[in-house]
Image (tube, rainbow, N blue to C red):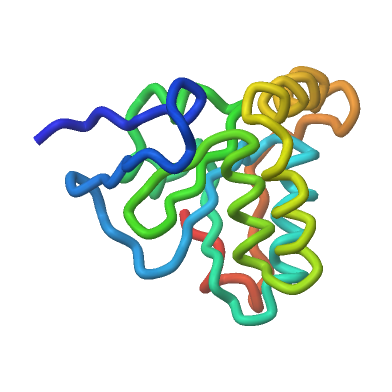
Length: 155
């Protein structure tokens, strides 16, 4: 079986990128840079607004990423990856799907973001990703879950 994952930067976001070769999660999983201050804010943002507890979270440096993502994704800690319904989304495409999954106002905001052409969205994403350590700092270790978050944060 192939372990190639389609990078949505080079294809349309609606293109089929089903991944039969990896774990097909019933719940979406967001992979983030575990030592990035901005990414830790994103985790807090998701946990506070995902009232149904749908989204699972895992650091790119962790065991779950090791098991489910290819080396190329694990090595690109400036990229958020979301596994959703057997498909993978990166960068701004992942952000849009996170917002859609949160629902309500956030879904509307995600739809507005979706209207921006992918190359422009990803340009903005890459600018922020390039500045994230300078603006938000870098942690020495990955974020540790609180007791209430234990079931949502994967190793």
